[in-house]
Image 1 (cartoon, rainbow, N blue to C red):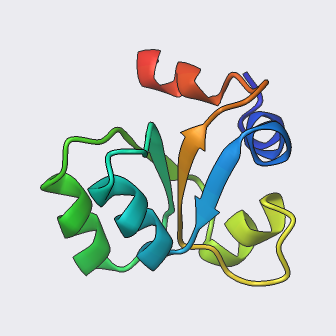
Image 2 (image 1 turned 90 degrees about the vertical axis):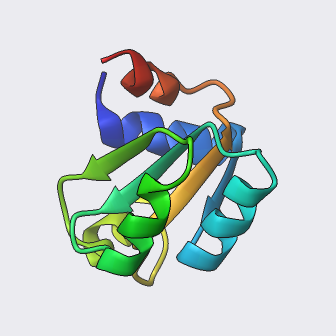
Image 3 (image 1 turned 30 degrees about the vertical axis):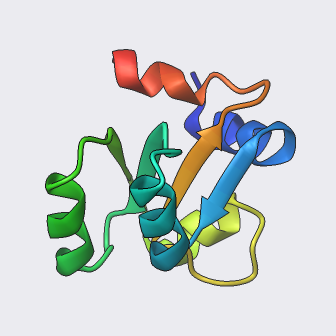
Length: 95
């Protein structure tokens, strides 16, 4: 699986929320199937994620690189996939 292609496909065909606040809300509502964080995501948010029952994948790049991968002109330190759509991104949970 090519992570970046799978993420772009999930964004295009599914439901993905960007940002720590939106990701936190998605987790609290029980909608997050997987959370992806940049490798420079703030420690307090990582601590929050460890307390929750959600699968977390750490992106091997900075928040600027994750934003670019998402097709956004800004930094994205965290995102949550609510619906993978036509993507195979949820296969990360089986790896």
